[in-house]
Amino acid sequence: MLVATALLAHAAPACVAERPPREPGVITVSAEQQTTWVRNFNPFLQGTRWPTTAGIHEPLMVWSSTQARYVPWLATAADWDGPRTLRVTLRPGVRWSDGRPFGPRDVAFTFDLVHRAPGLDQRGVWGFLDRVEVAGPDTVVFHLKRPFVPGFHGIVGLPMVPEHVWKDVADPLRFTDPVPVGTGPFTEVVRFENQVYEIGRNPHYWGGPGRPGLTRLRMPVFPSNDQALLGLLTGDLDWAGNFVPAVDRLFVDKDPSHNHYWFPLVGNTVFLYLNTAKPPFDDVRLRRAFSQALDRDRIVDIAMLGTTRPTDGTALSDAFPTFRDPDVAKNAPWLPHDPAAAGAALDAAGYPLGEDGVRVGPDDAPLSYELTVVAGWSDWVRAAQLIKRDLEAVGVAVRVRTLDFSPWFEGLQTGRFDLTIGWSVDGPTPYPFYRGLMSAETRKPVGESAAQNWHRFASPEADRLLTAFESATDPDEQIRLAHALEAEFSASLPAIPLFPGPSWAVYSTRHATGFPSPDDPYAPAAPRPASENLLVLVNLAPAAPPEAAPR
Image (cartoon, helix red, strand yellow):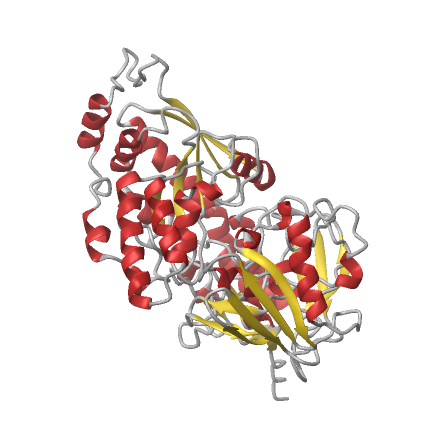
């Protein structure tokens, strides 16, 4: 397939030149890899269409991972009034896309909604909230049950919905919000078919004259990285969050004036998840041995084509440089590739080689497992094949199974898998990252859908440290606790980190300008569900039309 796309790349400029002019202000985006679209714009459910939480429903504030700061959004200020009270001041003059005013009652209603329907509370805000108070025409006060510093991120990051629409929704857990009403820059569903949908700009957007600069976002189905690359090369695709192999040669060199990319390592860390609800994956000795069997340098070089680096012992991405403990980062015993040590560790733990070369457990069951990965995610599929090779070299049989995203994600959330490759949780500090990996609060029984902790692991020591972090207001104390969490992660190894996930962004400025870049890193440039995509969507503008050739 890569050979085919490489051959196509040589003809791509001619293809672009022959295409008719496009309507100004319209760009085509690949933010999700699906085989068909399902109309779902409910901002509280998993698997909703982009840009539900990145352009339709907005939060009170936007966290920019590249700037490491909160950007005021629907709120102009959020200040602690004591350790258990957060006072939020709303931006004046904001309207919903149907023209109705946005106000504090909408904020209070949104939080009450996810309280009444706990399945919508993906951020877990009602684990620490006591009540929400409308305290004035532009003020909302959040009262916490206990001091909980990380709660700031959960509160200001929750997407807002209009009371006048959602109060009549009988079952918000099943509501797909097919005609969304939001405050974001793009709210109007202009077209929705199973292979393409289009979202037009909000006629009442509060962002000021000329914002958003674009008029419409167009999202055709691109089921795989290779098909997205094809779209980029033919000019059918302007902005993609896809892995592109040999991006300089295959894409940038075809039109250096317009074709660009940026892959900062601030994305979620990518893990090999072992379902610890199933023996023998609950055995830390086995998890450590599996990790030692993996050649991460080879995985990064071959599967990721050198676009990232192997993980360190903390498993943190480059979004957290001030929190990383260099000793834990360098000295994790499970980190170096050492197949001989991995085999010896499995022998010592009671997993000897069987007569057929496949190891067996204490119950005499063979160590033979299925490794699931999303079909079309070519980088992760290659990583899975390399993991299979590495584990089989130490006597573990692995079958790689590719699935469409929806069944893969359902299996991930419900804990119905052996091994899988997946992402992790991010945030302004390592607290949500380690909470999503090791907290008893995030561990769900197999069969129950989990928003994180898909591997079903809990550590009492991690819970103790996370609880201490929740009331830590001093930055130095937060760093000390983060270091302790990193040490506990390395000791218990709840999941096997592979590499920091690049924030994939490949884009053409032929039809739009204003994308983030290494020279202007105001946000990650990747189209993704995170609210920081709002920073990009309001900054994009139609490209100037090419000058006519002189007669």
